[in-house]
Amino acid sequence: MSKVDTSHKSKTDWERLDALEDDDIDFSECCELTEEMFANAVARKGLKPVCRKKQVTLRLDADILSWFRSQGRGYQTKINSLLRAYITAQKKHSEKAAANTERINHSN
Image 1 (cartoon, rainbow, N blue to C red):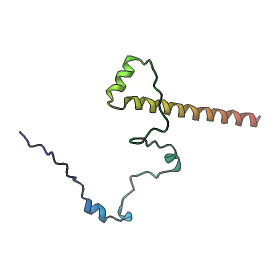
Image 2 (image 1 turned 90 degrees about the vertical axis):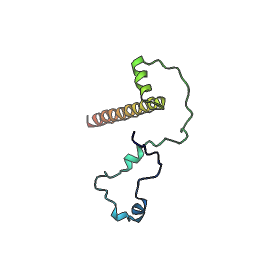
Image 3 (image 1 turned 60 degrees about the vertical axis):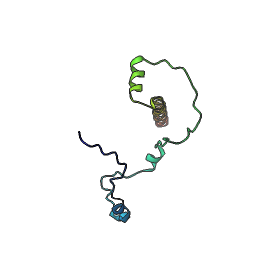
Image 4 (image 1 turned 180 degrees about the horizontal axis):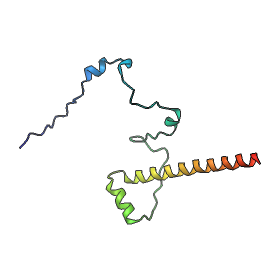
């Protein structure tokens, strides 16, 4: 039987990291962060909800609910996040359609 390492000691070389200067860090594989990325960012884990959630009864197909539950804890939050993303996408789509209609009306 092999011995399992139950140590919680970090394997990170903290001394080497502490010695690094900003110029020593290689960011070549990182994309440049834009203001739009930050505007669309979602950082909620561990924070209190922005607004109180309302409890509802929702009928879902059995396979849909089963799949979300199989994702583990927080599946209801994932459903909420996906619904929010859908709303955001629909709003953007509506805004683009309205802008196109406005552009067409002004060109006529």
